Length: 362
Image (cartoon, rainbow, N blue to C red; front, side, top):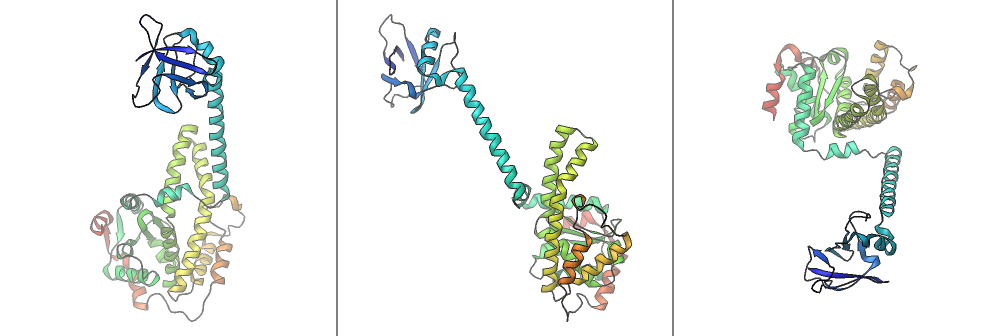
């Protein structure tokens, strides 16, 4: 719609164009909005980009976002800036600067809050991942760790299932069967996303009672319950992507990734220890059995108290042992019978292909 634009002290006065008059034009104008004529005050004028000399201005109206006024006269720009300095390039730069400053300050405050609180963005993301992602990621990890082999002697599997049921009778049936024994080359147990737990054959050979292996298993159940594997995976993937962009695939990036995860790992181990103590108590077993395991493991590998605490991925052994010993309870009964314990220790007499078992388990 052709219009004539007049510069007034109070704003732009717009009226329909007469034949032969210098005019401006509307674009994307909604007839239902009563602004086809009359005054546009200076303080309602907007522009998506700063007004620059030599360029015909395209203006908007603060109260009518769909309205556009195109003035086909670059000479009017200095007058517009004089009356509406907020449309100038300088004002736009200042606005961008303040928005950026506010954004940076917000990020700093967020980082400070996350650093001083127990909130973990990685944990929030992990908690909201679809179950199919947990299952697929965990399955891939345990197949890789075990080289696709696991211990599958039937009586041993039954004893293992009894141990899981004793520690966590309320656990959903599908997760009870996600605990396996497999050779992993170390005295350890590993929890993967999706609630998959691998008890190393080497650990089963090392312990001296079903309560010791039960304590270790209860600890790993704590990791699963708190989604520690998923959280660690999300954090590692996110930071490694950042490290590769900043540092490249070099040692510095790898070291940075490790240091980023140390604090969380110590906290996760304490949470899992506390979870194990509670599960053992609920099962009528002695949590101090896990302290016995730690003592023997410490004796095998030597004292580690000379390692600085901030470089540990786990709490100091003495700290953990004290907590377990303080939780000691009397009048307990073993988690497995003598025959069940013998069967569990013989579970690797027969092995199976883990990937095939996973397909059946799902």
